[in-house]
Image (cartoon, rainbow, N blue to C red; front, side):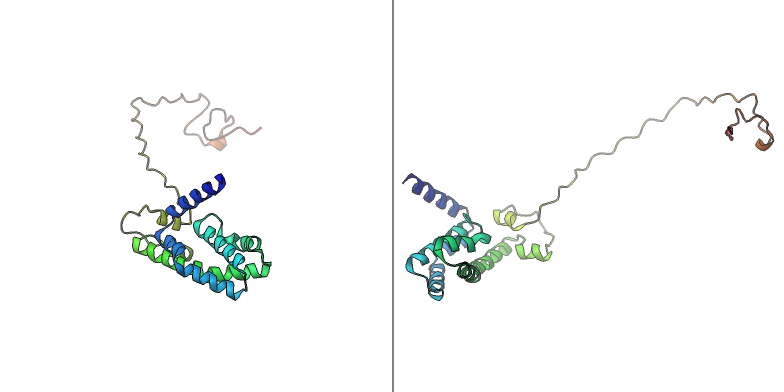
Length: 195
């Protein structure tokens, strides 16, 4: 009994966090009608149809991942893998696709980037600051690159005021004599001794 209450509370919390379009889809009779059509198409019994509807609702609420819908249908509805795959494909086309299209329309009305634009690489540059809505944040599937803060430049060092002191010239070094004529290269700043 306690688990049932906790599960109902979880579902209500999840429902409240969903975008308006998804909330309307969950409570609409349209989804229920489509699920009934699928149950007839795949020859499901009443208890299987109810289980199928629950699996779809859990996915819409975000309790289960859409990629795992086929496995959940196979286990929860107790159908073969082929039937579960066909049901998941039909549900994706008949239920999730219209909801996705409505979500994209809503995102465009809000000025946010849609997942389709992100996938195509057509992310427009916003003319104003991006809106920080949950839909806009979730629509951006690529991580934002961190921008490096601008650091002020290092000021130049002060000019040195002292004079440079040079070493005295070697006594062996003769400035006007060509270096190839010298017998000793010690102290010659342009030659190194060869050992």
